[in-house]
Image 1 (tube, rainbow, N blue to C red):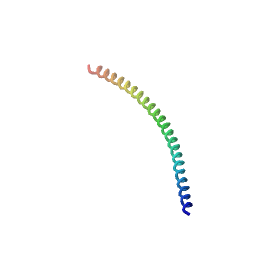
Image 2: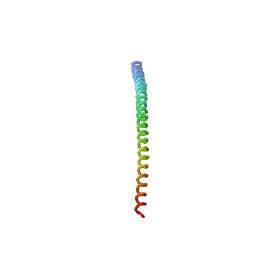
Image 3: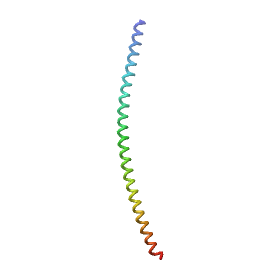
Length: 83
């Protein structure tokens, strides 16, 4: 009877360890897929942020040029009326 009990314990232990290693492999595969998706989204988001930064820089340069033109026009107007 004792041999049957030890056999059952051994089978249960082997089954448990097998499941742990199987599930560990599945978790590792899932983590790798998740890392790949996060890396892809990171690259996509980085590109979008860079593009937005370039547009913002261009708008800033355009705004600076417009302010310079307005300042020059105001200076000219004040020069004419200042006497």
